[in-house]
Amino acid sequence: MNWEAVLAPYSQVVEELKVKLKGMRAQYEYESRHSPIEFVTARVKPVTSIIEKAEKKGIPLDKIEELQDIAGVRVVCQFVDDIYTVVEMIRSRNDLTIIEEKDYIAREKISGYRSYHMIIEYPVETIRGMKLVLAEIQIRTLAMNFWAINEHSLNYKYEGAIPEEVKERLQRAAEAAFKLDEEMSKIKSEVREAQRIFRRK
Ligand code: 0O2
Image (spheres, rainbow, N blue to C red):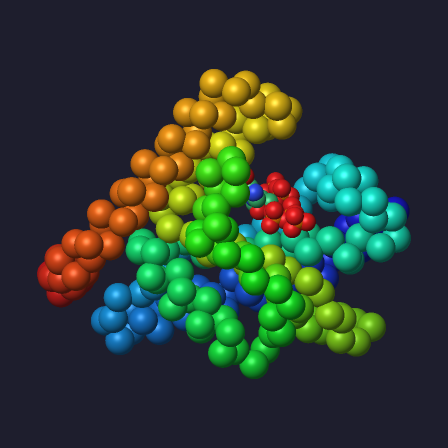
């Protein structure tokens, strides 16, 4: 399989989505308004992970376009309600179609994972015409992101079999991260006011 050729449209998609989401952030900045987007990252899933996930899901390699997260974009926000602002902004766009939404904030995963996922279909222009590509947008707070990147590293270290004791610690850490989000939400207006003053200086 010529992976470079297969993954080219996905690279195009992540670059385009990154530009568009960063553009939304910049518009808030021009208007000196609080941006619901803190930062945006994006990646094309590595080939080894694609093969592993396709095997796990019983998807043959000639059908890998069925995988929903080969193109992945992550939007990180300061506050939980910013997540829903971003969700609304994405829902109202005309340049993509929403296929599925998974709210792992209202219903966190057993691991403790919290994030809002949107699976979208995005039209990308290739030299052979328009191609519809699936992409996953993960929207989460800084605290949720901190937890998820640490848990992801541990999963890698333990090859998916995190010891029970560490799992429990992670679940407690997830609750602490969520508590932090809740507490920050309560003093949100004060934090925003302070950030407005910083911006003016
Ligand atoms: P990677 O390495 O990030 O690419 P589903 O068929 O919907 O039940 P699927 O397709 O795995 O299962 O979707 P799901 O559960 O929504 O997860 C998609 C992605 O969300 C994962 O991709 C992770 O990036 C992230 N994610 C989901 N659960 C967890 C979790 O418990 N911990 C962390 N750290 N991230 C999680 P991949 O391919 O698993 O991994």
